[in-house]
Amino acid sequence: MKQEEVNCCQIHEWYPKFKSVSIKTIIHELPESFIQYLDGGSGPFLLPMSVSNEDALPNRIHKPEDEEDYQVSEGSEDESEQPPPPPSFPELELKIKDSIESLGGAVFPKLNWSSPKDTAWISPTGTLKCTSFSDIALLLKSSDSLVHDLCHAYDSCTDKTLSRPPHFYLALRKWYPSIRPEMEFRCFVHAQQLVGISQREVTAYYPSVLERKDELKDLIHDFFFNNIEGRFDSEDYTFDVYVTKDRRVKLIDFNPWGAFTLPLLFAWEELEQGGRLEEDVEIRIVESQHTVRPGLKTAVPYDYIDMNPGSGWDQFLRNADEELQHQMRSSEAGA
Image 1 (cartoon, rainbow, N blue to C red):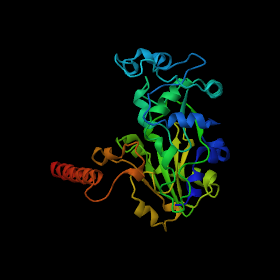
Image 2: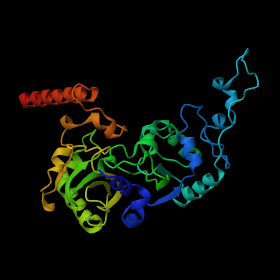
Image 3: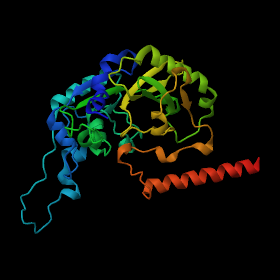
Image 4: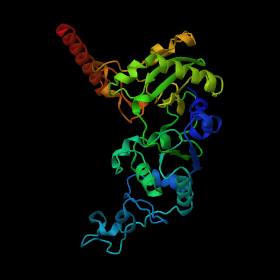
């Protein structure tokens, strides 16, 4: 994989070309000071000082000295030492505030490639829904998965010359409360041919999706043929789509082929065999409770999962496969 292929998948690179078939998004270039804040290492956890009084955790922003973690104990060598003041990004905050309002009052954020999926639990709603700059800063600052974008985006590139992109962007994407996770799919394109489609939510079984398997394959294939084929600046890549209740297909994202992208219900080896004609593209969906894949629900970039023999993930998957075979044999015997 080349750096150029990774760069093609940055949202600010592909969104202008495909905005008519994607989710409404507003993109802001981030100042370097904000990137340094996100990548601030092991310093105290401080949210930015809000200029619009929309603080997610006011006490942690304005009065960190009131928290026990910041108290100077008696007998300290430097009694006058004070905690660092909270950072402030007023210009960026006001731009983001305007963007949130223009997108209906709620958004979900992502950087060049990744969203802070691992910190959704921090939100009061348990989702990535954000209604203020402070909400966004909390999710981004707390996320470990965004370290990929900040420091490791090019680690799998054979021509690696960069450790990070020269510029970072924040994409604010319109929030849709009625999104159904079972209707999101990852599509695999090899040598500019659509060679596979996988259900993205592989941690649960949805009978209604299985019933529509052939219809969904046709809808997604037609979407690729009419909107993406030959227009994306790479030979090999993946893209994610969402199928709405009224059978429309919306483009969600692009990802590189391999590296940190999860193949979900496929293996990269079988996808790379290629040779499939477009009309023979295979779609894979979780087809029973026995084929649920709980081990794949992870915010850790795929490239960082140790899959070597004897590793924790290797043993986990072996145990999962053994349990699956046992359940299938028991089911067959009961039948």
